[in-house]
Image 1 (cartoon, rainbow, N blue to C red):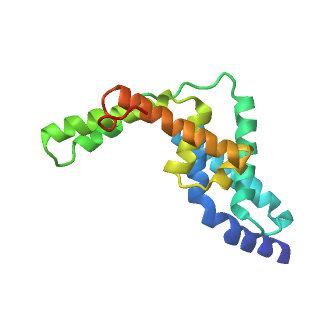
Image 2 (cartoon, rainbow, N blue to C red; image 1 turned 120 degrees about the horizontal axis):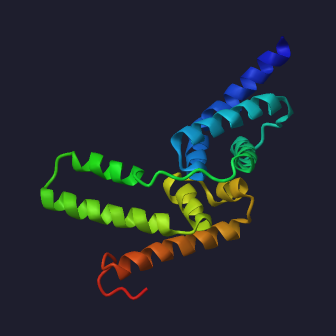
Length: 182
């Protein structure tokens, strides 16, 4: 009985505080809320089973490694990959348009948001995932590198390339800074 109590205490101490981060990373990997929830649940189950072997150092990195491995296994089982829902961004824009604001600014903001969303979706997966994990989910370069199992330098390079591609696409559409040639 003491073993289960210590496992439960360790789980509460190391795993539960990281659930929000796990969900954000899972969502960035799966691009689907229910798949992300399933992946987090799978990760937590695996973590609970292995908590007695965990040394207590770097719980986030440990959990993100479990999450990554669980996702790899899930993808292997699910080929061909399910189609993603392209209407999600449009629904978000419609919800935002329902809030108070000037009609002109709503149209301009919705158009700008839609173009940014499209530029983001146009990125190759390896760039989009890194951008989402670092810029949108707030993970560190190190956490992202451990999750994706690549060197930190690769994360930095992909992030720079992703930001550059989005900036170039928006500038080409006339949405970048005036006089920008980058």
